[in-house]
Amino acid sequence: MGRYVIRRLLQMIPVFIGSTFLIFFMVYALGDPVAALFGDKAPDPATAARIRKELYLDEPLWKQYLHYMGQILTGDFGTAFNGQKVTELMASAFPVTLRLTLVALLFEVVVGIVLGVLSGLRRGRSVDTTVLLLTLIVVSIPTFVSGYVLQFLIGVKWGAVTPAVSPYAPFDELILPGVVLALTSLAYVTRLTRTTIAENSRADYIRTAVAKGLPRHRVVTRHLLRNSLIPVVTFIGTDVGALMGGAIVTERIFNIHGVGYQLYQGILRQNSPTVVGFVTILVIVFLLANLLVDLLYAVLDPRIRYA
Amino acid sequence: MPEKTLPHETTVPEAVSTAMKSGAGKPRSLGQDAWRELRGSWLFWSSGVLLVLFIVMAAFPTLFTGVDPRQADLRGHYLAPPNWSHFFEADWFGYNGQGQSVYARTVHGARASIIVGVCVTLAVTVIGGLVGMLAGYFGGWVDALLSRLTDIFFGIPLLLGALTLLQAFTHRTAWTVSLGLATFGWMQIARVMRGAVITQKQADFVTAARALGAGTGRILFRHILPNVIGPVIVVATIALGGYISTEATLSYLGIGLQDPVVSWGVDISAAQSQLRDAPHVLLVPASFLSLTVLAFILLGDAVRDALDPKLR
Image 1 (cartoon, each protein chain N blue to C red):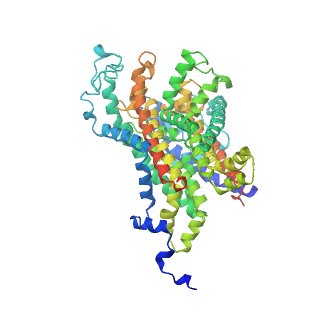
Image 2: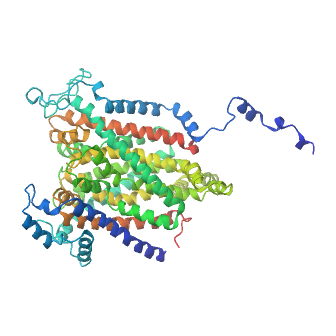
Image 3: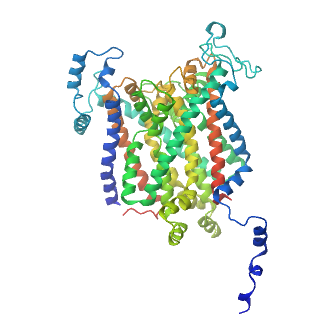
């Protein structure tokens, strides 16, 4: 187990390098950060050349990347084009998005698995049809439409919650945005759970468990659910990164100044140090979540062993 | 031992022999079985009809309306409300903030969304399916290499990756948006496929096929693939809806399709600020978008149920 974790941590290094290089390539090689600094005006060649030299942008891409990574290892994520340190932006943005993601994850895991089990066990009955219909409706409506409509109905018209989130973004203001953020994933979790539960509930080991007289809740929780959770856990693990990055839309609708907001501003203005820095942290979060998922496999299914 | 020398016909149970006589002499393939199942499913037919309708709308929008979607009459029609009884006419769904017919724009907007959704899903299923199958089946260094490649792309969320990639294009069409979405969309299928193949490849029927001398290609495509395609179809069809939504989301964020292109995403995002005064401008294209997504999901569901031998 310990050796497996160490091996996986070592395997993460090439993935980390690959992902960060991919985003580095898209930002610095496909886009032109120096031209973006000048906005719509044509940059003065001499000034542009000077800035390029200062920002280390006159070197080949791989050298720029090495230089950047060297800086990151010393904790220096560079300076955004407006003069603010990227680490300062991170310190204000990440706690907010972390809270938002936690709300969304909690909602999606609890509600999704419960609904999935309920409908999977009653395949074809009215509960199943209702839940399926609801997930279909939820999946069919894009987040920015459901976000605006829910914000308008619950926040503005009925006044049940504040429609926009204050700068400190406490948990209670993040409930509606968290639900909006989680909606699509919730439908995925419900449907995945339903599919695997419905398939596994016909398995021989379930018949055995029922035949030997185990109480129903024990059959469902210990035998059926545990064997059905692997695809669900896989999805949730990969969803953590998507939720944090996908908060772009939700954060824009509810005016939350988190990671999504900073990234969106960074991408629009081609503020390269911000984009690369934030994505680097997101990649690390994502990698650790993935490792956790793989370790959970062995917990859920003892046939999977990590030597 | 006289029993063993009995004539062949008497040892065949009656049911089997009648089945053989009734023309089912050749065993049916999985595809034929699935088709028989699908023919009786109303979900399959209703979603199919809906999809054909949208696809015809995307291919020949002029069959549905003669009105130019870009023709604007700001003074006469600014945010005019819908006339629900004027079927198939320019003012059926009212007018938008530019004085353009919402009905005409919605009909013409089908093309971009459907092209993007279908292109991305095809690309993603082929790439992701192959990568996942090879990684899951061969394991070892192939798995290590392909899984790390998957992880590299997976490290960057779909919307974020597509935004960054598309930001580099100053002129964006349905093809560039598809490229952006497919580049960061294939990993999910690859992972689902890999996981499913890993759990199946130890199964007895795979060992049996191998013992009977089946080659790798045959085991992969004839024995493992039919058993793992179910979850992949579920994921791909829900994802197709996701891609159409993401295309609209990119337009909403201002980095998707651009204004001269008529698309549901462009129209929904333009209508956002008028949600309070003229909800129809947003709700009509949003409903069409959602219906398309819904139809694809229902179709995928019906096909999934039909393909899964365990559910019979």
